[in-house]
Image (cartoon, rainbow, N blue to C red):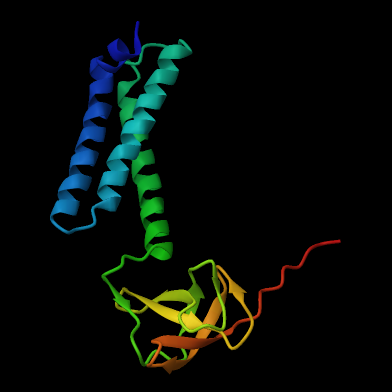
Length: 182
């Protein structure tokens, strides 16, 4: 039996439908301006789990996939829901949605940001830093240092805005120490 014949069996069509509905939900939600991540992730994961489980049953000769269909359906739905929920929470915690982007706004002194260019030096505007405020607005500003050059990813504080060059003077936070066992 070829893989396409295997996918065409009735006990796999349900999981292919899960995948198709998950993709349609994701596309339709994006077109409407919503974030359907949890629903689409749950459906797509249930499809992947179900197809993988059925393929394992078939390839290892563990009985008929048709006779085990109810267990595979319940297991893949539960697994898709659990993993989709976990991914959704992880995404919400670490990848907050961006509502808009603002460039070079004055009056942001004291804000902690992260350098996103390769380096920043003493020339005004030699680097860029970004941070995200409480409303979800991504702020991007030009920065420069008082003398030393700093590298990508460094945490820094915006100190003084120079309106002629539209660049902030920054101070760099010390690097976090990594303690190693000896």
